[in-house]
Every structure is written in structure tokens, then in C-alpha cells.
Length: 246
Ligand code: GLN
Image (cartoon, rainbow, N blue to C red; front, top):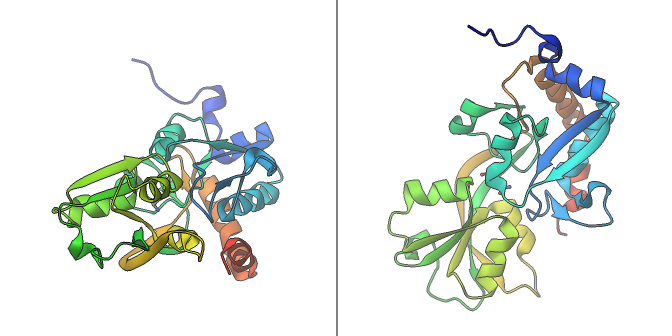
């Protein structure tokens, strides 16, 4: 019988590991504006609300920040479980299912889902009009789960790796509609973009930072303290308005 744990490095808590390493490794999936967007000139190649939060956490822990970007949102929890990253900051909704495989921080942002179609579309006015239609979602997200659980008449659900891929599919007429997180949908609406939001679906989701379930109590406590400070000091509000469309 091999008893796991109790040896060397594995004894260290999640927080101790980060401090000893001198570096916090954060996993995200860019293509989810305004939370994480690719920008080659940004530190770590990714910028946005979540990346400012990541930086604030690294600063408060007095360690360097490394961003690991994944092209597919749905692999983030596995990367966390495999120890490739210390935490996920990716507009990730706290759900019962995910609570089985990760520990979440306190919530830091509230979102709903939104139904988006092309401005030129006149026959989809709400989710009630999606029967037989092709709808794009970001793979492994709450938008996908919403369709699976609530919209059995949807003709076809097409999964894409990132939110930005779903909008490309919509503008390229590969799909009839997109169901995506409401703040991200809002970010894509502009005079020059071809999209419109026809319905906000009140799913009442809360974004949290996902951490390992393994020996992470001290890290979770610390991250919650840092988030609380960001919220109480008004810094979180500043970060959010800095990246949100006027
Ligand atoms: N909030 C959604 C989820 O957690 C979408 C996240 C994302 O695509 N980055 O499933």
C-alpha cells in the first residue's frame, strides 16, 4: 500500500508552493472580451478585467505573474487538476458541477446569458424562435448547458473554442444565433458591428476564481481577502469600467 502525501513538496500548501516558486501561474482563455483578450503588447500576451485581477492577486502575494492562455475554455479545469496552473481566472461561472472538481473564490462579477443575432435578422426575436435554428456556443460553458437544459427544440448547437469564434461564425453566416455571457455579448454590440442582442436570459451567474481542491485552504482564504479588498476599495469597479465599452 502506497500512502499518498506526507512526503516533501506535496506537503506544501497551494499558497506555500506559489510563494516558494515566486510566481503565480494563472490559466485563462482569451477571446472573451472584456475579461480576457489577446494583445501581443500586453504583459503575458493577454489583457482585460480578469488579467488586472490576476495582477492584483500576484502583487498582493508579492510574486511574479505568469499567464497561460488556452485556446479552449473547456480544458481549464483539467489543467487546474493536473497542476499546470494555480488558478483559473476566465469569467468562469461558479456551478455545482464545477464545485466537484475545483474550489471557488467568492464571486466577483454577476452575469446572465444573452441571445445574439445579426442586425439583419428579423425572424429570431427571442429563444422561443430558435426551433430548428443553428446556435453557436462556447464549448463547455454555461451557455451550452443552458441550451441543453432548456431549449430542446434548437436544431443544432455548434460548439466553438472561444466566444470570439462564435461571433465570427455568426458574421460568417455559419450559424443563426449565438448564446453567450451577457457582458461579452454587450461588448460585441456597436454601430459598426453586425450584431444585436434580442434577449437577455436571466441565469444569475456569478464568476469566481477556480483553485485546486488539493491543500488549498490558505490560498482560497488569501484570494478571498484580496478580492474583498479590491471590491471594498472601489478598485474592482475601476478595473471593470476601464475595460467596459462606453
Ligand atoms: N461564464 C461562462 C462559463 O463559466 C463562460 C466562460 C467563458 O467562456 N470564458 O461557462
